[in-house]
Image 1: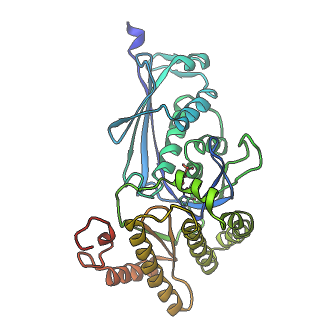
Image 2: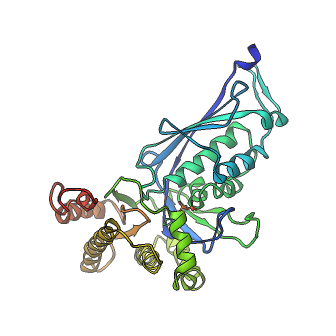
Image 3: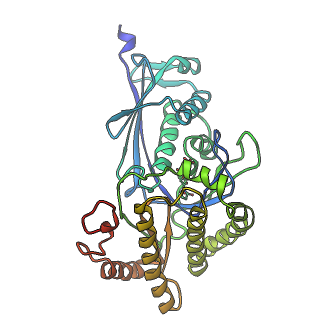
Length: 359
Ligand code: 2P0
């Protein structure tokens, strides 16, 4: 049957983002609504990004997805929520050259195939779910001719993974937690674009590219259920930091930016330490040691310079994210990292990986 032979495809690329004021804790698990606002910086798409191709054809009889070439199930609630929300907003699509005409109504019965790749380690705390869901939602929206702005699309990506909503924009981005029960105002808002503070250089020291042992989803659930500190953080500390961080970004005030970024990373790890069942295994304890060694190396340098040269931030995985104020401080930082953690030595960053014989 000739009418079954066409395929329509869209490919999109989305970078990951790194939070400088962290999201940790949900008030609604299904809609993915956070207990505090967060602010992140979106990376350059050339380095850490997801590339996703979505295709539709009348020959497809079910929605299917391949991640790094391996088929994964789309039956989970997060994928289903994203697919349903995008389909509900689909519009007519016409490709005259191929002789394809899809009406709004046709989308209900058409199935999609999705293929997605990351150019960085998946689920090692480098926010792969952020880039992944942002890219999935964006490419499906293009394929189905969805006429919504990135803010509205961010509320759909959020239902795939909270941090994904922030990857719909470049530059510095705020995820506003919102007040509505249905999540309609829990969206990403661009603060400044990527040209606003372009001297900043972000260095990611990949310590361990293996998969994390505790997912962020279950880790933050345990924090909300068991930490005595989390309520103070979400209600008292973060709202003030959000205001100060927005101002520091607007003014390109690196000293305040560094103070807030480092303090928020440390407080995020403090609530993790305050979480029952969080720090159980040896590899996590070793990671904490490593985090402290990098922090101490950065803080000594910042103090000796009199004015901060680099901010550090650590997420749920064991990789260090270092934000240098400019190119000069970047080369000095790399020299220092290589001096303190020389490759192929006992202090090689990779030797902190459990299972390495140097442990
Ligand atoms: C963040 N993280 O703001 C924080 C800092 C990790 C530490 O967002 O359950 O993968 O999918 O919403 O977005 C990681 O959490 O969790 C995260 P879900 P997500 O970037």
